[in-house]
Image (tube, rainbow, N blue to C red):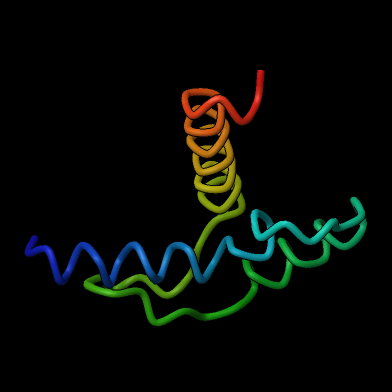
Length: 80
């Protein structure tokens, strides 16, 4: 995969999870509703024939991104 293709995939992934990690506080009910909507939607996934994203895939990417952000914050001294 070229760098441009990798970037397109990364942008797509972020477009899926950004509401979960974007800083706006969502209630548990709002998070569930949003997750359900995203799983029900048909997506144009870059470089894939698939059109659906599973609940576990969305949650995995969200948690992965949150953990990465926390590690960066700790390494930069923002969080102790």
